[in-house]
Image 1 (cartoon, rainbow, N blue to C red):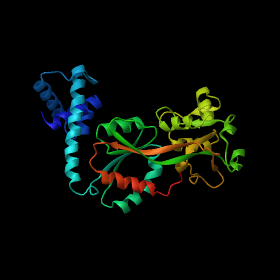
Image 2 (cartoon, one colour):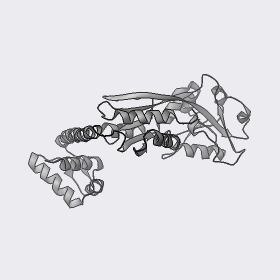
Image 3 (cartoon, rainbow, N blue to C red):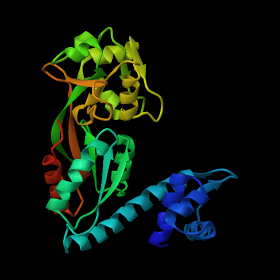
Image 4 (tube, rainbow, N blue to C red):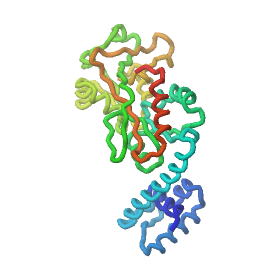
Length: 303
């Protein structure tokens, strides 16, 4: 068996479709099919159940694919060890970030990183926490930027900074005149939340009892649809649908003409989240991790 064959079966298990798996592996479908069949013949075991529209793992195939993923990770570690013997800051770093951090952090972080590590470009993935966790575990990402709590075996998690939450409201709303907002004043207001799958929704709910009550009881609360984003919530507020809570780095109202939206801080103790970076304990480029951390901490973003 070869590493390519192992990569093919792992990708096929993920995609559950020969055509999509072949595209991901940059080979033709016949090439991938022949390689998978060759490996099955060599192991004398059926790895996949095949139908017209789907490919699914057999129980034995699942065990083989799990081990294949470990082998591929170890092979990647060998390459990383070789790179570590060279300049750790001269090869790309694969960075993932949750959707409510990446778009607002990277415009500030990347210029800072160019100062700290000018020869180290970033391969960037913005996604949900669950997907980033899986890609970190599978070795597809080197480091991810998430919000705490985050627990994953054999992973080092470093808190980076605390980020306050802010209320975003139409400028004509009476709360827009306040210097600070008490969350209890929102009990009778319509509050907009992100939909399921967004960890930021959970962060808001956990940050204050009023937010939890409104969400759980659906009392003057509206949950945005699938595929929604922070920008979706901002646009809904601008349209007059209600109010929302956003992280400080994303609470800017400059996208709209002056006098249209207002972003207001909460009273102390302010609802907030802790942003952190996580990477595999076995990752062999500590200088790259340190450079990214330094660049992030130097970012002139509102927190």
